[in-house]
Length: 264
Image (cartoon, rainbow, N blue to C red; front, top):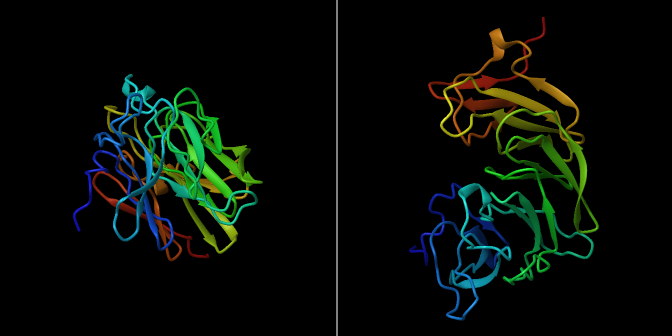
């Protein structure tokens, strides 16, 4: 099926299903005129929603400064949306998005707010983080996890339809996308890979594991026994994969597999 625009160019992020009737994605880097009205931005770096059957634009959200010129790290462009569990009191269909501008946005996916000049009051919530987010967030059991560039892994609780800071880890490194493994609502673990910054020399990756109920509690990292556990050279924007009790880490020349050690 031919889509109406090359909306995922350079975004590295995919779609989200918003139920049977809609699909959500982040438009990136390419411009799609929304309306030929003075003062309106183009559909560029927006959180947009398409009709699930026709793929026509049905709703969207954009920060007030979307499309304004600026250096790459100052742009407000958004990353892949994370659909937060529904229902939440006072907000039936929340979705959270983040971007290079260092702001998290909580948006009502039933009424996304469109765009307005001057401020972000059309978002349900806008929350600053120390630097840009170059990966995606993760969601589990009413918690949202996000890592902005050069910051700690931050955990937010979803309370009364808003994000509230819960805990932070001591994770060192550049922005990364967390992965959560769990047995339903129990035994949650947040996994992260230490990557490398843009144009930095090769360096080994590192795997970290945190208690998903409180990420201030580190459970494991591969540097604890580097001779046995250190993975290969880091790839940028890489994400650990958890399947059947094993964690798979792709590196520059190998795939490293982690699991429980045999009982001696």
